[in-house]
Each structure stands twice: as C-alpha cells, then as structure tokens.
Amino acid sequence: MTSLLTASGAETAARITAEEVSATEVLDFWLERVAGDRLNGYLWQADRESARSGVADSDGPLAGVPIAIKDIFCTEGVPTTAASKILGGYVPPYTATSVDHLRTAGMPMLGKTNMDEFAMGSSNENSAFGACLNPWDTSRVPGGSSGGSAAVVAGGLAPWSLGTDTGGSIRQPAGFCGIVGLKPTYGAISRFGMIAFASSLDQCGPLTRDVTDAALLLSALQGRDEMDSTSVGIEGGIETPTAERLDGLTFGVPRDLMREGIEAGVLARFEDTLLRIADLGGEIVDIELPHAEHAISAYYVLAPAEASTNLSRYDGVRYGLRASDEDLLSMYEVTREEGFGPEVKRRIMLGTYALSSGYYDAYYGRAQRVRTRIVEDFDTAFDRVDFVVTPTSPTVAFKLGEKTADPWSMYLSDIFTVPISLAGLPAISIPAGLAEPEGGGPDLPVGFQIAAPAFAEQKLLEASYALEQAIGFDGTLALEGGVE
Amino acid sequence: MIEREQVLHVARLSRLRLSEEEIDTLTGELSSVLDHVDKLAEVDIEGVEPTSHVVPLENVLRDDEPRPSLDREVALSQAPDPHDGAFRVPSPQAEA
Image (cartoon, rainbow over all chains, first blue to last red; front, side, top):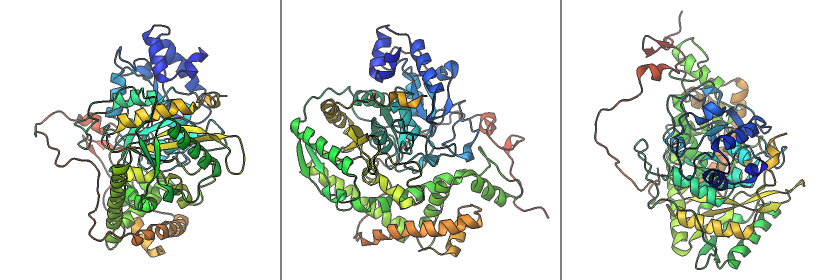
C-alpha cells in the first residue's frame, strides 16, 4: 500500500473510483500514518468513526480521499483550539462552511493540524501546544501559520489539507515544505466557522501535492455562502487545469522589492523559474509596485487592529478558559492574561494602541490609506501584465528559534506575500526546486509565488500547472519525514 | 517609541493583566515595531481614500425572516459557568 503514500489526492480518488482500492482502505492507511506523527503536525487525530462523522456518501470526484484540517476551522463535536490555551477544551456546536463542503464531497477528516496561535506567526512556534517540525529537516520550522497543514502533506501524514492565509499563512509554509499552497481571492470561499484573526484579510485555501489537487479542492470549497456576506464565490467555477504552454502571457517581476535580504539559493531558483517561463513562451517584464515596500508596516497596523477587536470575544463568559472568579474585571483580565500567548498579546496590544484615542489617524487611518496605494499599484501592474511573480519567501525554512527573539525579523519573512493579501488577490506558491540554506545544511525547498488579478483563479491555476510540469519537482522526497 | 505608562494604559484597554516582566518586554518590542511602522509617514496619502476591505460588494441584504438559531442548551454547552439558562459571571464588584 505504499503507493497510496506517493499518490496525489486526484490519483487516489481515481483509484477509488476504479475500485482498485476501497475508501476504507485509504482511510485506514492514512489514519495509521497520522498515528505515527513525529512532527507535532496534529493537535487532534481522528479514528475511523470520527473521521467519517458527517461525511456524505458521495460518488463525486473527491469522495473517499481524507483531508487534514487546520485547527482554526470549527468542527462540530471535535475540539477546536486555534492552538490557543484560551480555547483549550472548546468543542464547537457547528461546522465551518468550507469543512462542510468537503464533507458533502465525501471527504473524511484525518485530524486538526497545528498552527500558530490564532494564525499569528510565520513559523508555527507560536502554538500553545508546541512547535511543529519541518519534515525536510526537523531542526527547522515548517513556516506558519498553517505550519501543521503544510508539514503533514509534505511529510506523508495526509494527502492534502486545508489552511488559512491572512498575510501568507498558506503560501509561506507551502514554500518551506515543498508543496503547493493556494490563497484564493478574498471572498472566493466562505469564512463562516473560521476563527477570525483579521477579517478583511483572512481567507481559506488548500495545501496540496500538486496544482491539479489545488484546483480540485478549490472547486469544492468556493462559492457564495449566505452565512458570510463577504463571500461571492468564483464565477464559472473551477476546472482541472491542462495548459502546457504560457504563450502570450506576461509575468511581471517587482525587482525593486527584491533588492536585499534574499538568500542566494532562493534567488537562483527564482531566476531558473523565470527561464522556464520564457521556455514555455511566457514573457518576463520588470514592473514597479512602488508602495509594496510599506506593506509589512501597513499590515502590522491593520491586522493587529482587526485582531484586537476580533479577540475581544475571548472573555471567559461564553466558552473556553475562565481563569478567575474574583470579580468581573479581574475575570476578564486574568483569563486573557493566562489564555493568550506572547505573540497574540503583542498583537492585541499593538492593535489596541493603533486604534486608541489620539493614535487612530496616525496609525490605523494612515495604514488604510497606504493599503489603498498598494491596491492601486497592483491595478496598474495588471494593466500591463497577466501575473506578478516573486519568491514566496526571502529564505528557505529557518531553524527553530532563529527568529523568535526579534518580532520584526519574523514579520519580514512575509515580505512578498503580505502586499498581495492587502490587495485581496489570489496567489499560489509552487515548488521551484531545492537550494542550500544560508549557513549550510541539507538542501531545502524554495517556493515560487504567482499572483493574479481578483477572481482569475482559473488562469492562475492553468499557468501554475504548465510551469509545474516544466519544473518537474519531486514532491515525494520528504514523505517519509513525518514518521519515525 | 512607546513609554511604559502607555503600555499600562493599552493593557488596561486590552483587558490584559500583564506581569511586570511582560510590561518591560512589551515596552521594548512595541517600540521597536512602531519604529518600523512609523515609516508609513513617508507615503504620500494626500487625498487617498482608506481601504477597509477589498470585496466588490456593498449592502448585502436578505429578507428579515425569523429562522431557527442555536438552541439555548447548545449555546450554553461550552460556557465555563452556565446557570439557569444563562451565562453566569462574577459580580462586577469585588466582595469586601
């Protein structure tokens, strides 16, 4: 049954349809893998019965292929913590719309994956339940915040997974783990039941072995949901991509944003990939995104401001932790002090400061206007080009503990993903090959990011598919890394 | 830069009872982050409208029809201290 390990989601689905293997055999195979998790990739693991709870008896294209779900999605009857102590023991009374779509498609749930607390982080080290390890090199981080969702797919502990991306939280860990991560356009997928971090930025998306799998999952996930009034879906739906060439397509490279701080190996794989694009008939042009260099600063006002508001609901009254019964104010303050980890407190403080009387205009108001400038930059770029491409991250996966002492250095690992998030655009990270990390060590995956105009997911997937075939990355290299 | 007094004020607004050590650490960390964020002042935002969201939608409406919501029992099932069909909380005033 080892062939199930290397099969993509689509290939496994085809084998089930052809009755070469039963859905039960597939589920048992993956549950056994999950039970051997040595990456701390899962915070909760399903058994055969709980994996199938609520799953429809479907004969659709995804039926029977199990999936791992980031622990930020509410799942009825299954603990959901967002990797926070403040939600320790919380069992939601309802299920997120996106997860519900997967159940309707006949997909069992393998478990809930580790993440940075409330999706705040770029290394998964902010989990209240311990760091998650990168299957390529367990002394390194898998990225974050969807670190568990990326690590389990790369490390052979799930065929595919669901994550969320606010400033890069799908794309960056996908890049660090050598898999495909897609952040759809804001509004493509319902956010109902997804625990809120920064509501104007949060978006759900798939982490997969390949682009075809990303398309299959997006097709099942996208759509308007009356429970989320900001959801609109993707007009015309999503088809399996088949493009072989990139003729007539233009790829813009924002060179100004790439002047410093990029590892040599990352830059080399990026340049290789540009050559492949040209080989396939695509045109490479330099573009300017004049305000993108300010994206991290704007993001670290806007996202914390939204977070400070969203996280005010954790007050010890209706669910989760209550840490004091002294008096009402103490109950709030002690519960939140004990329940939240350091990064979450930092962001609540930052956001509250940015929204507080006397500072609102200087910080929040200004950051919202800079966001407009960044949106305009992309509008201008997309008048000229079909896609904007960058490395997904300036480095390969870094060492555990390497960036925890300096918050800003951690924040900078999202320098290429955050501008796209602020503009609400769809973007994908695909593996561009391996590179030696700075400071030495085994070669590690490098992500290549492609961004497209709003709701141009089909076009994005077609181009990514053509490029993926040309790159021919071997995604099976770390599959044994997830178990002893 | 942010002063220790401001950190204490923001902690009160945030309903966080920070330890002395955390107050010291956060004063340094927040100052450092704000130094970077202050570079936003370099951007010309004269006449630029703020962006609060990027969805091409406004005023999403539906008919105001009553429909079932969470049962009271279910809504209370995760409460730290449910009591008599309600969420019970400690008194707003500390007992003398």
